[in-house]
Image: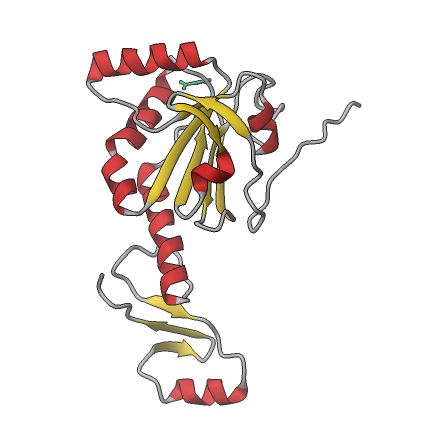
Amino acid sequence: METTTLTMPRIGDLAPDFEAMTTTGKIKFSDYIKGKWTILFSHPADFTPVCTTEMSGFALDQKFFDEHDTNLIGLSIDSIHAHIAWVNNVKKNTGVLFEFPIIADIDMSVSKLYGMLQPGESETAAVRAVFFIDPIGKIRLMMYYPLNVGRNMEEIKRALIALQTADKYKVALPLNWTPGEKAIVPPPKTVSEMIEREASDYEMVDFYLAKKELPMN
Ligand code: BEZ
């Protein structure tokens, strides 16, 4: 049986660099992501229904991503001409403009680099991937969805806020955490930290599972 070796990025890797044509001009990815959070997301094809709902969802939440210091950048294995025609079509039909760049990955090079081309799903279309990349260029969270199931924008926004909150306050975030809820204090690393913790005002199930309020932003 023939097997295909795929490059799959991993959490903690530096985001692989590339140059590409996009709907806002040519970019060098390492320059584009420098100093800000970035969400890189792929869609299978222009002029398809689920993709249109998803791309419109990102565009409608552009203000949220701006307020969270986050660049958006889309990708599909389509030409610049197809991207521009689709952007124009969606704007005419619904009034929604995709302001973020969309990569024209016509040679599939970026899709392959980021594990977006998964042959068991499609040999020619990228799956619905989402990469959360931090301001130093590290991949911090990845999502991969199949062609026939759209992503959840609320979860994408929650995950971004969770990553930013975990970094800012050096905490971990429990199951189903949403902004405003208590965060998990990292477990003690020494016996004296463990004893100190008993005197704290943390909400504690036991010494290794303690939660605290975060300051209101
Ligand atoms: C869609 O976006 O609707 C779609 C794209 C590729 C395959 C299946 C659905």
